[in-house]
Length: 56
Image (cartoon, rainbow, N blue to C red; front, top):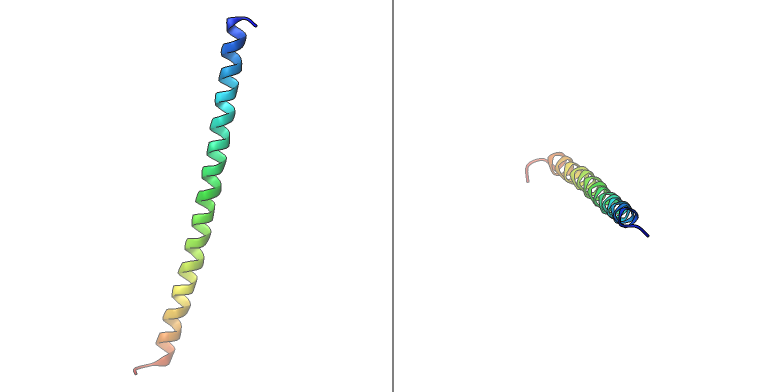
């Protein structure tokens, strides 16, 4: 292998690692977004329930 081939291979590996890391980050971010929406819906339903109960 020539020096140029070694550099090209290392570059390819670095790009691959970066893509994997980015994909994991996007998956985590998507999970956080979904959980946030679910929590907001839950809080909304709790507020509606409390408001329907009227003054205690």
